[in-house]
Image 1 (spheres, helix red, strand yellow):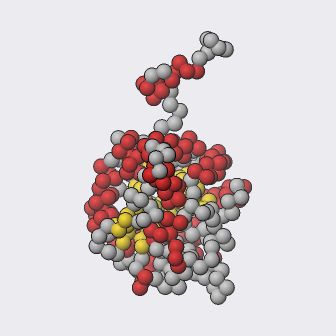
Image 2 (image 1 turned 90 degrees about the vertical axis):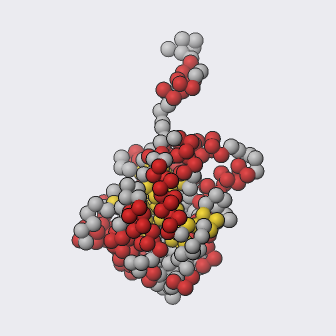
Image 3 (image 1 turned 45 degrees about the vertical axis):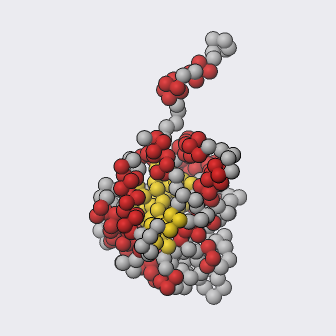
Length: 326
């Protein structure tokens, strides 16, 4: 069939027809909302993430109730550990009454229908800002770190976490965590592996949010992935799935849509993207400069993730998007 019998614009004429012919859809059920926890008693706005704040535990519960009312199924928790509780070894990660565990218990008590995803890595707990234990040369020790991450995961699972999300990129940690969860009876706790997490320049505002930016010594290139590599991402995903991950994550999001697409095509498993802090900040900066309209950018970028193959997206715009989609 050729023009004029074929006119692709016919189905675009009316809004109802555009909705009817949409190939990709996004709903609030596709969103995970990252939330930052503070030990303080008041909301703490984050300057480099306009519109995003750290919240005390009571505030985290209130935000989760907002999210649940809008149909968001899951929140992701990240603590800003007080300076006096940080150490070179990150022992506070194993404290059953740390900020993360307090927030998990409060959420599961107040909003039991809300899924709780918890970050497993040591950077919010260390004085040096790295995701693991470092040796005298500043190199992050893989196996010793993995042993601590297992205990951190068990600590969070015991508090009531629904999804353990290791973001550290240590080799072998997914298998060790899965085995430990099974042995401790946490058979229904999911693992969402940060399987392809790149050493990106888009993480700056997040590090402000968890208080690690000024502490970080060196960079994370010895454990996070090289942005030049795609085949390596497929190897990382394959290993994490083989070790027991229930789903995998690609991070950051928009600069790595090709990776999301390839992972989904190769493995046909649930794939999530993290629309990271730098991506959020760029959208907000464009809006503030009068260069773009927030609603359009938020929905277009979320559709891009779904079109690439994502089952869901971690995004700081989750609440705003859910209201738009509601």
